[in-house]
Length: 439
Image (tube, rainbow, N blue to C red; front, side, top):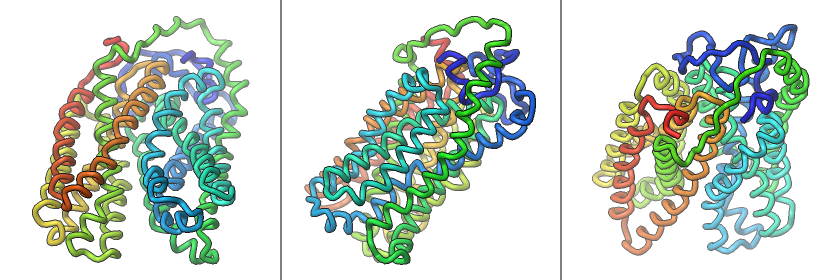
């Protein structure tokens, strides 16, 4: 992506260096990021803070459209006359949309600027979430859900680009803040959707649509950032000429492939955990209420750890040890679910919550494995799109094994087996490499 394309995101360009990602120290602009000293005037003081607010609000909105539906899925099925097959399809639609729409993010960002696309993404989430309960049928519900998921997909891809562009010397802390807000939004939607639905009169339509208000708020800071594009682009054009960025062929980078597979396997584990862990506990004799709390604990673990882990990762030249640690926690959790799911339920929930923090680690590595804006946006789109495609069959396969085997032995063995290649490719992705050097 050219520097002008990042004008929506970053301040006016100035002198740049070729420094690597420091560990949350002073900001050091990097090649092709469109980042420099703060712009002159009041905007140079408040605009970065507005970008931070936009990041946090965007992150809060990247999962409620999914987790709020999960909380009310039974009511939605009854209200729309939705078949079990279609309801099951809904659990795979998010990953499919993330893959399909996420791959378009680089082209859209080149044309309109990443800030404008994130703003449009928040608007799409708002319209999709508000409209889908009231469109009258399953087809309309699915179409509006796809609109919201498209907004989530492009924003997913471009968040690492925003962070790398504005805060190249604080990739760890800003990715941690973003990941923590994402985990918080996920947990809040799962925990509050049912109580809010009851408080608002008991209609599932209102309970789903109310989350559109949060997305509407997230549009506002990005509108202001987008309005700065022309002024910032003009300032960038007035600086000294800069050498063009070399094209990046992402598919020729072994690190990009390793990161994509790592992203896909960690997403598979996360979707399996969210979709099936409560049922594992219930089949072991744990009450439905307690099983739900255990899942909430697993998800809530991501809030503090998602802030700490990226900061730690940027202080390490090789993130492989963190990959191994998270993988071992996952293997320990799966072993516990196999041997004593009820007796050690709280310990297994905590271990699985730690293991699921491979997601913010993957996001951090996306920002660290490239030195250019073109590399960051292409790597983010490639890793997430390929990764989400990889994650689609996992939850469905677990359900099939559970149905045909009549127990959780084979499904848990599959989960544990997938953790081994996740560790292996994560170690490869964590090496101190840059995709520009490999391509």
